Length: 81
Image (cartoon, rainbow, N blue to C red; front, side):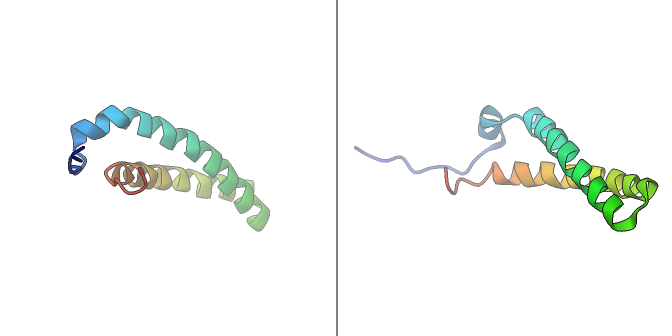
């Protein structure tokens, strides 16, 4: 039996495994949970609900974008598959 060397992951191959839209939906669902946690912690620390929502709204956007790119990069890494 001859083992074929694995090629590096391509965008086309990655799309078959997990489409970018799936990564976006996962990012959104995870950020909802994470943002609620951030708002709660911010509210407990500051005692100000308006400030907690401000912190949570900024965190929602920045971490969703970071997670999306983190997920896409990990989809190109074959280690552990």
